[in-house]
Image (tube, rainbow, N blue to C red):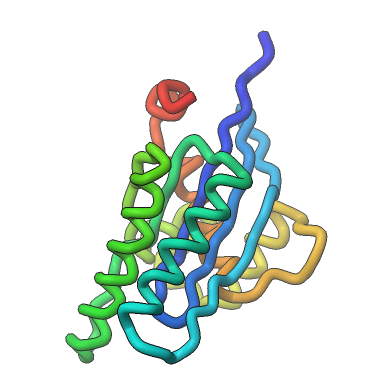
Length: 167
């Protein structure tokens, strides 16, 4: 029996830089498909949200993932930054929804646990494990590595039945 290939989009949201990663999953095999960083600059906030929506929509249209995962908002001390990040995350989720993708959220701790085996891992450890697992053809920027980690986490945690229904 040949197992179906499932294409998963992972997103590491940010209002200035958003990581995007796409993987294919077939049984226990995970393969790198694409990664990028959407850079919005530091212009007007509403324009940055529009750029996030538009560019992620273009990536989804080109690569046609069947499921999506996004990292949850991490709230530190700066409430204003958390609100902006939440709005950026909303624009990215809306882009996914406009293409019929269901979006599963994952906490940063769960993503790190799935990829590194330790929920408090450093960013460089996440990047190293992403490179070891996926063997991407070119260097992976930090934000894109985080997005690929979100996709890997989803591949490990999402029930395969749900993924199969997405096809």
